[in-house]
Amino acid sequence: MKKKIMRITTVPASLGILLKGQLKYMNNHYEILGVSSSGTHLKDVEQNEGINTQVVEMTRTISPFKDLKSLYKLYKLIKKEKPFLVHTHTPKAGTLGMIAARLARVPNRLHTIAGLPLLEAKGAKRTLLNIVEKITYANATLILPNSFGLFEIVKENKFTKDNKLKVIGKGSSNGIDTEHFKKSNISKNQQNELKRSLNISDTDFVFTFVGRLVTDKGINELIDAFSLINETNQNIKLLLVGTLETELDPLKDITLSSIESNKNIISVGWQTDVRPYFSISNALVFPSYREGFPNVVMQACAMEIASIVTDINGCNEIITNDKNGIIIQPKSTEDIINAMEFLLNNPEKTKAYANAARSNILKNYNRELIWSELLKLYKSLEA
Image (cartoon, rainbow, N blue to C red; front, side, top):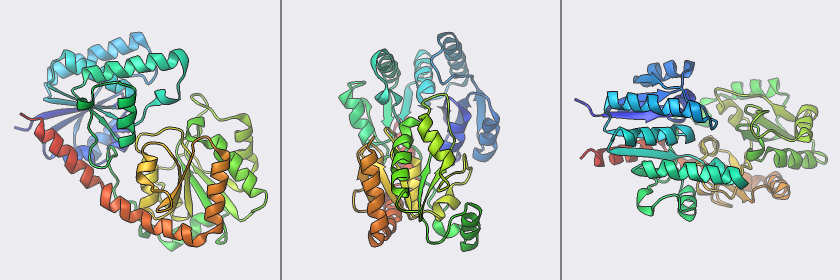
């Protein structure tokens, strides 16, 4: 009879998208039970991953009454299911899941960190988030930062003891499906049709951003930089692939106005499949303030395009400056301008970065490598 592992995330999209394929792989070795809030994604997870799921409603915001209710339901579920290991992802699921698992006396309590929102917080909010983080780690038996940079940040902030920290492989929560993210999967006809529909010509240099359109992703600086370069160079396009979020961390009004009015800035919203957009791109520009281990950068590299990324954990682990891309300082419009202009003025360098990008992903971040390393860890905890 297989041992049972419970995997918990705050929202079902995290189970289905961030851990895509991994749950199915692990289900060959263990009985995997996925737990998250309700939503259509949860049924998709059951079908796509071949695992059982359970609903426990959790909020992404701090809501003491609702959080206590969620904690009690998680505790009851864990007591009933008796997993030998509980593994949580995302902040709220991590805090509630680790406390509940400890109360239920689960021997192995793992939490993966895939980014720390508190890094951009200040004052009382930062103090509160620090406390919550320490509570999560205190109730876990092992903390898995998904990058070496996060490992160091956790150490510097003294959130937990060093011997509780471990990075799986070279980093990343789930690696990347390198057969799926492959430029040859998108035909020339598809590329040409997409370019036509977006009014992009063959002579245009296409910079692309993929992710949420929020301040923390560096979008204000990116739009400023592009707008300034665009004044003297009309043969460039900026492709924005992602959801515009207006409540948490909204963009400046002037940024929104520029996106709306500049015909060379093309915003296509959320896309289920980002590969066609990468296939018509010359470079990824990803000026984020904070990350865990960014899937977008791995995807862009696997699709053989050069990258401009900020000098933050995760990004500076996937990208080596002047080898497969350019590393810049966060929150610097000037740095984004200089990097973009360098790629525009040095086509041979841009091509060299693109050529080096995929081999690094194949060597270090292929998803089977990450899954195999995580499986080894699970096996080592069985005793």
